[in-house]
Length: 496
Image (cartoon, rainbow, N blue to C red; front, side, top):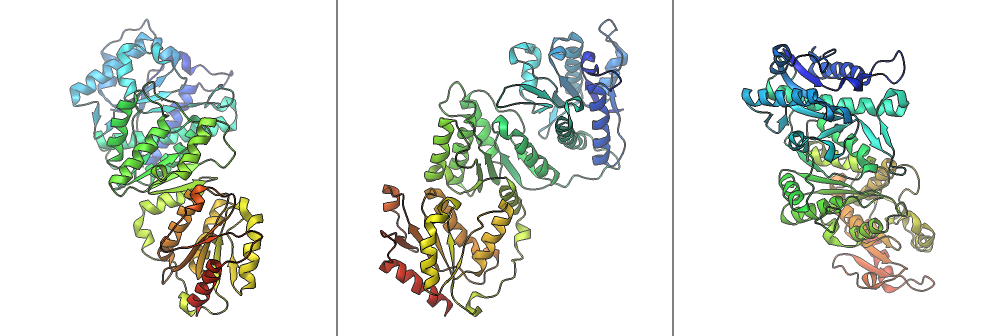
């Protein structure tokens, strides 16, 4: 009995260089090795190495279908033009239906591997419906700058080779899960199941490799990742699919890049924007943590995307119940895994009780890197008042910055957020971090906190108010006002 049947066009196994293996042969071997490693035992992958269009589509080939648990279609321009390949796929689907079902427990017995992209209008109508419901494993990428196609083939260098094996790993993991769903393989170790389901929003081409890495790690940890099928093309249908997925998820992740993304013909917003809107609505109806990654300031030249990113930071309707991240994705991944592993958070990091600390009171002065020159006068004033001033990391990677941020929250007596060039959303996130501080290991909450309103000024800043936070408005030529003096005294009282 075959575990896997590979359906492909023979021309796609022709090597680019004399003496090399063809792409299909390399794909077959690599997939077989990786699946055997995951299953813990050998398995049988069958493909037709010699049959041609003039050969008979007879009982011998049909038996290979009926004996195969899953089928892999290697999609290329030649594949969709081949009557032989189409008949292989249709016959497998027919036999699988007769045996029970083509799909069970959200696992399909047909896998779509896209070696070379094919225009939708070139796919035969009888295959369109099936392929549109399958999550494709694309063994190529499109250069976002030039629009050129790059296939994942070792002939094209080390990067293409690495991406090839990354895709093999993704495909092998999904196929092993399917094999265990339809017919458990004797002696194979059980897949660790998790009650955590993650909504990992689809994104633009530039961020697809990063999304793939996150998806791969989540699956390897036993989590379910949605959407697990292509989204429809119309926004009304996309909304139904996305909201159905969100209803099953305990956390939503959005990666927003330098480009706005594709806009459905019946919508005014891009697919990434629509997904963000609907996850915000879901978060307003129930507890749904959201993680949103944004490119750094000045990294996008897309005016529409730039305006959208500004809205996300400024308007609560977009960042409600969300943590925002910029820079590399290390911090987002770390926070996501922490949210999915609550048991690991039960043992807090040991910290000395704040009340027993000696020496001057400590204030954590939070500011954006761009505001460091403007914050110097405030830092000097606080130090002159006898306070020990802690600052965020101005250099190093995001993991180091995150570590120092938590250590400062653990050891400080109070926090002062410098509201200068940063957006309002950044201020809200920092104040939310203050509330989270006991979860990092503090023995008591941070009760002294303030927001220092600095130029550039606007109506939103002028109207900033809070019942539990000292709101301090900067004075010309930096003269300390009564509110700042009161904040300093509160810090000293907290230490005494």
